Length: 309
Image (cartoon, rainbow, N blue to C red):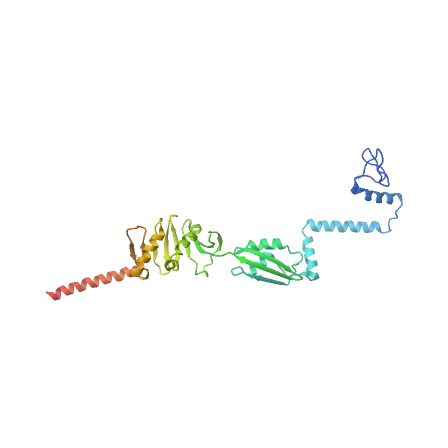
């Protein structure tokens, strides 16, 4: 900083009129006009108003207070209150596109209140806050002055319910977790279980889609050893498929069902892991009925033998 009485801390000098002379210090261009003004004030060429000192002190204190508000994070709150009171408060929020995202979650994510200023609301920050919500894949935020906020939400699509240990989660086709499964709704989604099931289920379901008679009955998919699948049907039957060419096993099952209606019987599982053999396991009720039928048959045979003697 240079003194304005013609003296400087360096070797050169600044003329009162700000002119540059040989051997004198050169004032930067930005400071030349203020230098001339203060030089004229000190030279008496300009008369300072009577209350200039008081006004200057007030301005200094006001500037200091403003700086303190900004530094302390209070300026934004003050500006928000002022602009809101001038008629730019958010009075209406229109939300569209959401199914699994509640309106309350949207309001909370944006931090909206009765005195939120539409003018100071940052659309980019609002969009990012909404896209942090579990179901929101993409969000659009639009201001409609003086007091309306329009929000359009595109949600992520749940593909299956994934069981990992005791935890249940809703996942997308690529296996990404959307949110924890609360235990209700989404009854049309299959349950996928086992290591690697979340990321592999979509490709396997695509394979099954060529066989709607089976795909339409899938209730759960169990990934066994990260190599093959057990398919649990809606009627409780488990179909055990091989790791290699599972589609061939499904075709074999459909041929079998066409002749014997095996998928409509009271059985627990159908094992198709071996290409040359099919193993069927009965349910407990079916086993009990079978044993009862066998006993009744043996009794009838014995009775027939006695009557023939």
